[in-house]
Image 1 (tube, rainbow, N blue to C red):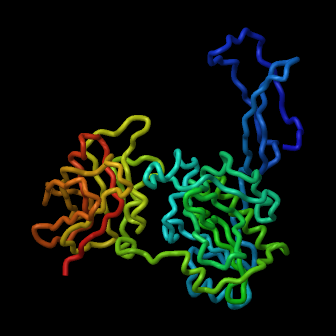
Image 2 (image 1 turned 60 degrees about the vertical axis):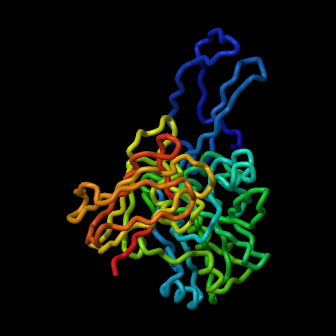
Length: 393
């Protein structure tokens, strides 16, 4: 970024025909000695001309300290331990689990397709991020003021904090650009004084698989180093209730310790979307590069045996018929994930209303599988906005 050249080379001269894609050769550069973290530019040009192309490349350290600096408490929720740390005048990093953020805004790395008024609210609902690259919280996270490819890993698994109910002076360190049809104050990183201490809230996943998610690991390190320094001085105050209002309570499946899976899912439409309490998100089977064929299944595995009387299923709510289940069957696993023959089957209409499945009799199960045998209008997809168990009385 500062113009320092760290490597250079030349391709063998050749004729490059216009209007075609041409392979010039391979570029192999060791970056072990490159400064890290840093953003590099790979530039390919033609000598003696102004013609060139360039690509951004980010370099992150092979190893990043994982220790939490003294005086900082890291929590996934504002629980009693986190609150006690704040009340003692301490610093708390609220590395929130994105699935518990109370939001109806579907965050996406890519921008809105056309506009949400035209697509009936189809996800995503956002237009990237804005930030101050010179903010000390981002000192160890090279970035421009806008989205670039290094943000994909973070945004893909994040959830948007909806800040409109907070005092207007609360401005996010990392802001999400809203849909122009529904202007909102949205953020991914927010700081405030709370209960006598200093709180930094992050709704990007800073916890999962950091050994392989090097971008998330670097963001976590940058935020912790910021909090450990003298520049972490929030200017505005929130109440405990205002902070907790940014998040939702666990639903029944989450309280039961359930895990969900599916035979197929498109990126951004994972099975977890069907149990997040948000009717605007959904599980959807793959459509790129090619649709996976029917039948499709959606499975709930419980942490312990649960006595069920049935299921409630909400189809996708955006008006698009793709993935609306027509013929279905339900299978159960009583000793794990060895499934029975179908215990009930049926057919649904295309209306967006909740669909209720009643078992012939209550069953104690370890897992239950909803299988889509066919879909509306003959398409090969399956989609679910929400699914809930019906517990036996």
